[in-house]
Picture 1 (cartoon, protein in one colour):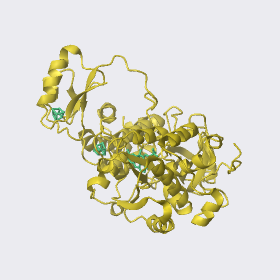
Picture 2 (cartoon, helix red, strand yellow; picture 1 turned 120 degrees about the vertical axis):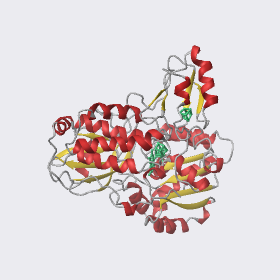
Picture 3 (tube, chains in turn orange, green; picture 1 turned 30 degrees about the horizontal axis):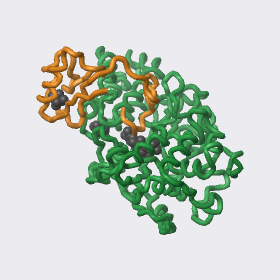
Picture 4 (cartoon, helix red, strand yellow; picture 1 turned 90 degrees about the vertical axis):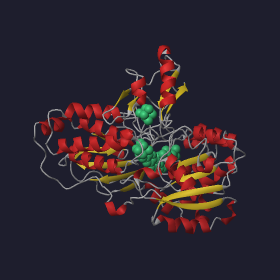
Length: 89
Length: 419
Ligand SMILES: Cc1cc2nc3c(=O)[nH]c(=O)nc-3n(C[C@H](O)[C@H](O)[C@H](O)COP(=O)(O)O)c2cc1C
Ligand code: SF4
Ligand code: SF4
């Protein structure tokens, strides 16, 4: 979560130096401001990316499974607003 | 350490005899602004003191300072004194009674970081601006360019990235991260954005030393904090407490309850409902709700008030205050507010409970800023703390109407624009 926010840290994920999350690897990230709910990412990654009731993508927090990496890269390229990226943890 | 300081008295920022508002009196009490060699020395001091941000998150201030110092370009320092939390008055009181303490802290940070500009952000039309201008006119020899910026009166306009953006292109809405303001903030420069109280605390920590600073508070959250106590208490106002003190101490400082308290909203409108008067107030999550002191707003709500109605009123406000940029916040907050309002009115349909739970899970953490996460925290804590009332409302038994308790800014007090 953001470095600066007024919201108190979630007790389940305290704002402390985090232990290395297992497992690590490249993960999908969406820029929530840029995303315009075109939904292409969910189409290209069925099961991995789902849409909420308003059509915005819900991304798993963990890494993209290796067998989905190619599809994930395609989704990143297909996103019309360049809101999707793959971040390495 | 033999330095003197108000050690016996937990009140440091606002001591009992009154804080010195005039520069001469301020200097007589606290001495000259301490000379800090560089960012490294400041980071080490602040880290040793264990100072954490008072804007709400409790983020370690030393880590933020270090991030700004690592930026390469000449940084900018921003004092966040907007205080958009409707039930908070602590920054206003601090700036009125001890403006030079805040300015000293900003100056220490600016000098250590080699920043030339310090921007103090206030809400547009805030009467504190006049006091601040008077204080600044006495500080021409500081060697920094002091600036005042007036920010639109919107709840999220004072979120850190929104301030950085406002000071860059005039639009007071949050930006996506990364990069964070520490890395690339105002006009692309590394930007230290700290709450006004944080900087006043920093001034004291540097002046009297880490050991003194740690002599009150908890091990992981040392020092004091300002709290704004309101609701059904005898003397609503701003008080200074030792971090880790129980909620009852803060309520007691405000003269105690005037009627039986049902629950206290702790930490502002992104905070949690608390029934336990023994809850320790600090930035470390405590109690069943994982409550933290947040920005220090504490509102005691009478047992006769309806926690659901009060929460619904706040959620409607928070939904209207979304910056309208991120889908889950733009659409999710009004949907959640609507669910809770229906529940509060005793008009829940059979699908409401499941729908609300799903929506809360789908909205938290999915905005560019923490605004929606705060709203979800509030709603979730309502569902647990007022679980009995929730069940009664579900069965179609709402509470009898009561006068509203939690303050909601009138629409005329807010601006529609973000510029
Ligand atoms: C919706 C929202 C509103 C905020 N409003 C304020 C505010 O009015 N004043 C403030 O100091 N911090 C506010 N913050 C927190 C800032 O983003 C930032 O964390 C803070 O200014 C950093 O200062 P600190 O490290 O000294 O706490 C807000 C955060 C959010 C998510
Ligand atoms: S493809 Fe891009 S714009 Fe469309 S839903 Fe996915 S992230 Fe959002
Ligand atoms: S989460 Fe909400 S308030 Fe924050 S930037 Fe997105 S739309 Fe604006």
